[in-house]
Amino acid sequence: MSNSTAAVTIAVIGGEGIGPEVTAEGRRILCWFAAKRSIPLILRDAEFGADAYEATGHLIPPDTREAVDASDAILFGAEGGPGIGNVPQDVRQAGGLLSLRRGFNLFANLRPIFAWPALAETSPLKARVLNGLDFIIVRELTHGIYFGRPRGIETLPDGQRRGFNTETYTTNEIRDIARMAFELARGRRRMVCSVDKANVLETSALWREEVQALHDAEFPDIELSHMYVDNCAMQIVRAPAQFDVVVTSNIFGDILSDCAAMVSGSLGMLPSASLGAANAAGRSKALYEPVHGCAPDIAGKDIANPLASILSVAMLLRLTLKRPEDAALLERAVGQVLAGGVRTADIAEPGVKPVSTREMGDAVLSALEAIGN
Ligand code: IPM
Ligand code: MG
Image 1 (spheres, rainbow, N blue to C red):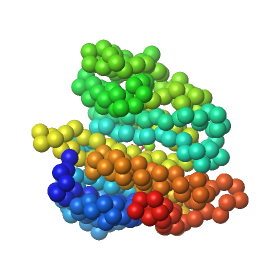
Image 2: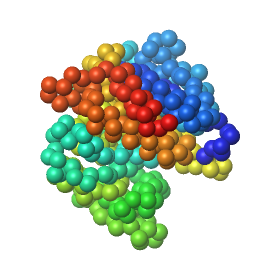
Image 3: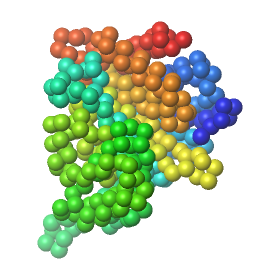
Image 4: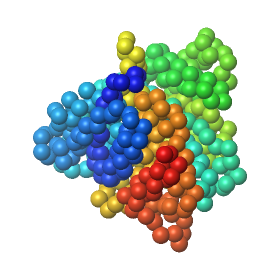
């Protein structure tokens, strides 16, 4: 996406809840790489969320909009969702994180699921179940029931209320995300499991047919299987090492990725990348964010785990900056920190004194200094 001289612009948006604290640590890591590796980066810090709404009447104020428009990638923290601040639900729907995802057509959400050896005790799953586990959930992010119309809540003649949403998928929407999954699988173990609910839903029946048809036409070298979503939820806790690439719809991917997070014991460990289609010049925008939400109960306390944000920076290094060695270095540094027993509260074994958000960032920086110079 960039040549060696052109600066890459990253919009840094902490957002709401614990978002600003964890993103500050991801940002420090990014700055370490920019300095030590002479990566020409321009960082643009931007406001987002309930505070921005109070001040400007917009969740995404015009300055932020301008910063994200001008950026190659966005490092995002967290969004509050309904109930955070005095933001009406319709403003959230029209102007929040989902509008960024949809506005830039970031249709492919990659959520790597990895069992960190040092966290085996933290995971509720047995070590033998975690053995060899390394898969990735490819979640369709800009269509399906999250965006389908009609949607709403109406009052019926008898005074009851009725809520409704619409799940739709078209041929191209399915094929675009399936293609991403098949291409990813070519760089891995060449296995794709497509997850749906084709025994009940028409959208899923179409999903299954289209994924199979694309496979047969263009990716016969990939081993494709299909699985119902309820079975998949069970398999993720029963035998998660069976998966390589899991491809699924927006809502199923949302649910399965929280479930899969437990292989590492905490949602605080899970990074993600949301990628758009490349334009004619071969450039595409990307958004990197932790899978966790805004966690209002622990916001502002300096106790949240910043590793999901830091590992999102590793994905940014790999996918936007095209620096796979640096991405691997950062992941190694995180592995060392965990192996050394440094824990935030969410991943601390009983009796272990947890470090703060900032101290976890410090620990990763020290590890980088030790192994990356
Ligand atoms: C996620 C989150 C979001 C989603 C929320 C915050 C809208 O749960 O990224 O998984 O449902 O997509
Ligand atoms: Mg979610």
